[in-house]
Amino acid sequence: MLPEGKIAIIGYNVETDLGGGAVELGLWRVLVRTGKYRPGDEHRPCVVPPNEVHDSIAAVVESLLGKQE
Image (cartoon, rainbow, N blue to C red):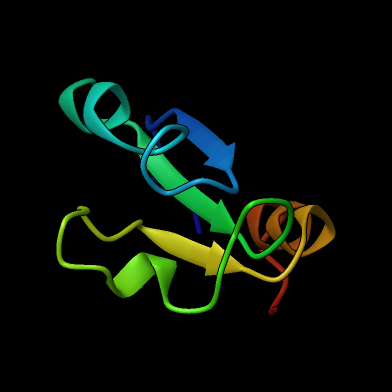
């Protein structure tokens, strides 16, 4: 769930969508397992792990609304 006062970025590529710039800006980084996502992307040693991982955009929306995934 998104902490109060944080801005979220949602992406399916852990490096280009959620990488360097998003980390530097302190954004809440949400990875969705769609598009370019490959199993285990969030655990690769060359990336900063995302704050959240969801199976779909719908699951992200439910999380943002405070519902259980």
